Image (cartoon, rainbow, N blue to C red; front, side, top):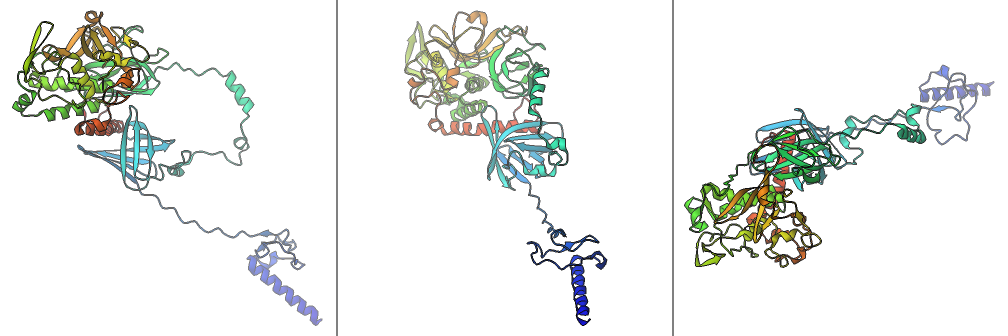
Length: 567
């Protein structure tokens, strides 16, 4: 009897202990057997037992231990990027949650952005939008625009970690994660029937690919028109004064085969059209070019120098060095090693002289093609120690002849036409595989192409519509037109018997005669290390300036259609 009482007390203590551990009322515990000795590994965990069940650790449900509450992740500070220029500082602030602010001069714009697969997309509150490829490291974000322009934005505050996150899971998307299939949704969790999908594709109607290309943005910096397509690729383009594009087979369509391109255009009001390889034509895009250059056609209002250029410029309160730096800056902004750059160098030189009413004189045998000949020659215009005669004409003043003037213009944009093989036949530098394979039809030349008439050479500046019928019928040319360095307007009819050379190979640094280049081995493109310091500095700065100009327009910080450069 005494032993039975002791056993009852012991058993009651076990029940009380279990009730205290589980938090269950005693009425919920109705076990009749002791816990087995061979308890599972988590036997130390409390168990819950339904009323009426035996207390058996093999079937009892362990009560889960509450997980610790995670510490909240602090929101990273905004990433502040800056680009300082002579005209002011541009600042781009990227917030962790996908917002941005951009500030330039006295204007600030805001919007949202995403950055995936190395592409930064910005959407402004005012409806502007822009997309650009990028690379990033801890010190800088580099924006990679078409036409070989890049803008480096330095990190001044914050971290770039969320810009370099995995492309499929950028950090800031966590605040608004993409929809994922519900694990309880059988249809969403099961893989699609690949056979059915394939059959569906085969039986569906083909997608209509007949949409014409769309011009996303086209803007003007001095005389350079920059064009970027929103959709499609331009096989060719044309500028016209009409609201409708020209016929398919006219020479106004200039081949380009690009989704982004740049073109030199003289001052005027145009409609731009682009056409894709299937012949589909875009809507017209209005372009107004107001370059600020002067175009003294046939040297109107200009006098050939009878004193040195150095003295003439000093009389006007300037210097040869200042003129050279202005020409180099213009050419670099248009693009070193490009058609646009060399044409700009020629126009800039004529324009700067024309604004002062002067011109470098023509001189027979006036070559200016040495390795160290750069910029405008201070002695041009000075009297020769002995006159020079050629073809019955006598020249008394130092100047340059036609080939020398073209070699000069190319060189100011970084291209060397001095060549042991081609000599004075400078158009042959554009040959690709065999002699004269770069000849083109008289009405198919582009800016920077060369024209030969006997022993005389000239360069195409632009195609123009002289009678206003919407079709180009003449060229503006750059040449030494005795006794001037001048711009001329020549109709297609008057030049139809001349020889035209396409110079694409030179700009691409290709072609059969490249190996014969003088001074710099096997290249048409002069290394920056060989250039005057001011010229090389202009080229170094121009790439970033063009990219910043493009970004400011894309963000709406300057007018996209503004023909006046902010710099």
